[in-house]
Length: 95
Image (cartoon, rainbow, N blue to C red; front, side):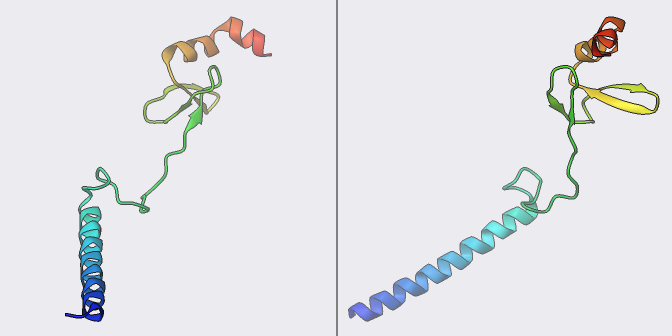
């Protein structure tokens, strides 16, 4: 076997192995196993995070503590931040 045959065989094996790995990777992504149930780059919707006006932490609306006033909802990271924001002394300091 000469060196040209070895080079051709190596290139063919690399192509076959690369194609097989690519197929397996795509198959796993389609099944959701590699990304924890989400597919890479295909998000159905993004979640808008809200900034807590007291401490500045960004929080998801699903887990936030909410305060509704005059039809406007403000999101907080904790009940403590919500209560501090809603207290009369805090309102006077912000005004």
